[in-house]
Image 1 (cartoon, one colour):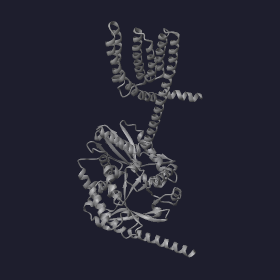
Image 2 (cartoon, one colour):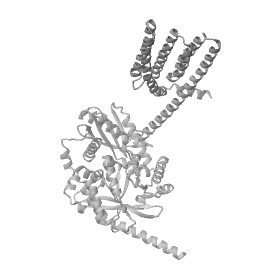
Image 3 (spheres, helix red, strand yellow):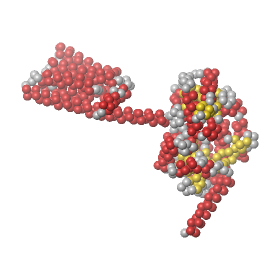
Image 4 (cartoon, one colour):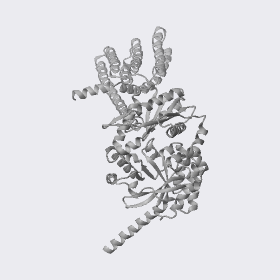
Length: 638
């Protein structure tokens, strides 16, 4: 053994965490022994009362009675705490052994019975169990063996030599048992500590944003749920970078990633007490401010963060600037769940970006309804002719192995006479907020079924459901009713859900998705890996397909980590018999890299931008004609 390994060995043995783990392992052993020992010495006290008289009874009865009471007190008081230190445990073991030794010694001092000298050997065996450390075993066993030899020395030589042999054998046996016991417990403790270390490391990785090193969405919402469970007042703030996308598009993702890291460094450097930051996706961050701060104080905090982040950043010989808008909500007066608080902070952020860009806006409960009614999108959702204004575009899903389009994703669009072409993320969010989402989904789903009925039977359609959709049992049943009336095979229809939608009510979501899948429809998890508990949902939800978030795809050309993550997810899906879609593939260069990973399905501008139903039909016909032409060429050549 080298000096370094020897030093490491002793360092490990003296590790306070390991010592405490050893104490935790030994404590139940001592507690288990003490109760029968206490009962035994109650019996011994009674036996002394029957057999002894006078001073002998006083001495022996007192010692045994004190021993019985002491064992019970040690068990119920000294060793009953959740955390018993190794020193306390060692002292308790020595006291247990000392009382046991005194009882036997006292009896032999008054009644010398050679046949009972074996009790000292039995004590040594017991001491090997109650001794927490080798030091305590030595301190207990040596007096016991020495006393055995002392009493045995009064006997004839032949008996003396017999007891010497018994003593030597007992000593070796006691230390052998102690060694085996400690080795077994040590292995168990070391295995548990290693498992705890690995679990802690995995937990840290699972709770940390890979790019910036701050808590990710999952960790942030765990903290929010914890604060809510403890009824601790706090503010939730969502910060969204203004102008980041333009920088990312112009200068590339490497510069964009460096800028995000710099933004996080700037925010965390403020060192504000009671404040923690996290990244919840893209260029959106969250701040948790614990404490009952006033609105003025939280506005001051938000303004300080915005001012710090908005200063120019020297990134790769350039001075880059981004703006920041923020929205805040407060627990418990503005919401009693993480979903409610996030929704209201996000609503305040929407208000900030729409009307007070670069400012901090607090959710106003008093003006909630007025504020919603003032938003033009919500008004048009209520008053517009959605049957005629809503329509679908279709983006192909391409199979590299078959070299053909095998399905399309239906993408919602809204052309409002008053508002023009409204972004899908805006009107879907507004529809969820105002309660119009089921109406919107119902109209779009009918249009999707009408289009799907015209396509060949080997082409499928993916349709997106919101969190509000999958939480409504009757609405889901109405969608299944539409499928049955259409005569279309349910296996051609796939429903896509996001992690954000699922988290609103995981149990209801599981039930509804199981109903959809039980009817023959397919279920896909969209934006896989974007946050929360992606891998946990693979186990919890009834899925047929996983769509890898485009944030990983766009980094494959320059990030080994992203390539390995994508490859790992593809392999995992293959093992779990799940189909896997790579979203956001836009260039030949990306496809060249991804082709080596043997992807199942590809969706992105490289194989088709979102298109009308007519263009989608034409694409299907073109690929069928091309396939027939190739077949004719092959037949003629043969």
